[in-house]
Image (cartoon, rainbow, N blue to C red):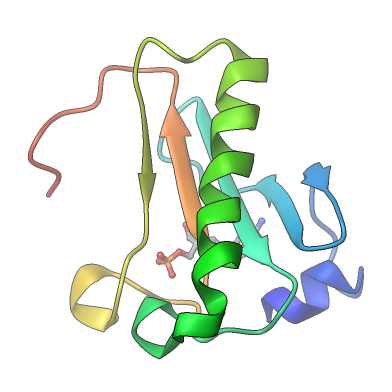
Length: 109
Ligand code: 5GP
């Protein structure tokens, strides 16, 4: 499904794009900033990522940090992969959540 977002077949509010990644507003935000950063390469999830994806996964984190800086939420934000249905993964195209703009409790639920 997120491949269709990258392709523009499903509309989304784009936050950032480059040759490797696409970032957009989550449709059901859980915080004032809730952005999803996805690699354009289709990876099902963190479990399915391979050693060859190391740089791409790290790059998604760098994109999240850049968005957080631009949004002025560096006092406290979180980057999260939900891995597997038991952790709430509902879309099986790897996506990094960037959450911030409010107090974030620890541990997460
Ligand atoms: P997961 O639960 O897999 O970790 O996260 C999936 C996220 O994708 C959820 O936070 C959900 O709100 C978001 N989402 C699901 N479908 C769409 C969609 O069509 N557009 C956008 N912008 N977000 C979506």
